[in-house]
Image (tube, helix red, strand yellow):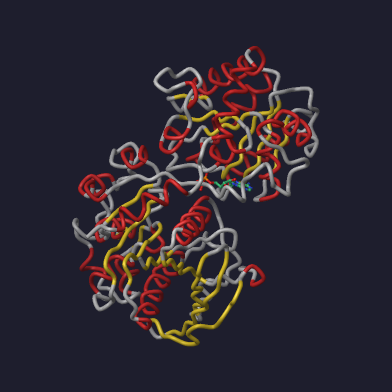
Length: 479
Ligand code: ADP
């Protein structure tokens, strides 16, 4: 099958969070299974060409809406890439980072159209055009209404986070050659929120015009059809329910492997996890006397429950443990608040906080921690709990979305003992998180064999891409 993915991220070349890791993991596994997979992404200025192999200028000059583009082909991470160089005067992808600009809508709607112009030049039959998130969702209406000549059999949309929908005005569609006013209709791209009847919603366009929708976990697939989790897109998602199938993400088991991880000192395996963790704690400037070490590795945004993370720090210290936080926030007031918190704890030898995006620190921290908290208000799939389990770090999670599908409480009798791998709580409240921390500390200090069994179950579980990659081709045979 020939599958063309379109996305804004591809790890590690262009990664802002889980999306980039998922795109590379899925595409690599589908390629390994013998599918003909290509990925189109913007040629960001910060992409390091040393990470690309067989970099060739494929199409030197093709026009999109009057401005020039070039397409490069390359191999990276076992995948075939096409890097779209937009020579648009606004320098759309020459900004040093992926997102966070006032014209993000213009940047990605342009990318959506330009990539279809490129596919038009190639004229090769495509079985599946697989779109990821709002950034490229407009490709779906484009294909149906403006690029009908493209030999594309079906369109699939993955929803990695329904909070981000790409809301804009009709003139934003006019700017890329669609008549915006025509799409301001309930059954097209008009935003479902009745408060904003003049708003165009790009992700909605993806949902309405695609043949299949894939949210990144089964529980999240159900949740986003409810007003509580749907961010006002739930009416459209409920209507599209027959096309929706949740599939869990995997993780890159080579990248995240404590047996071979070059960031660790020393590496370790399930038999040596206790010693391995002890020694990896030495890479951090904290006394090892106060255990367990509890931590979080996360974007500090409302979704991730930053206020609950703050409570967890205090509770961990009260229980006699240590807390380590690696995270950063794109939201100024949240970052400022955590800067103050760091100042508040600066004399405390059992707290470490670091506000930077650092791959190497993340690897080391997964290895050094005993418990990882993920108190998210919603979580489409979540990768940190999966990575933590690979490293023998027991997750404490709020039972929502993919967290609910992957973490099974040590006291939950609905699951066989061999499946139980962590701690879960239901309400996103400080009280629920705190009492779960108490349970975890109790088990760690008084029932070590049971705690160790949670570590073992997590380390031995298969969270690779193998299982999900078997499910995708079934969905791809949509027609
Ligand atoms: P999201 O995509 O919503 O941010 P996920 O749990 O799906 O959350 O994926 C987060 C990914 O980003 C994980 O691989 C995690 O290790 C990584 N990550 C988050 N914050 C940092 C950080 N400050 N430094 C390094 N890696 C981070």
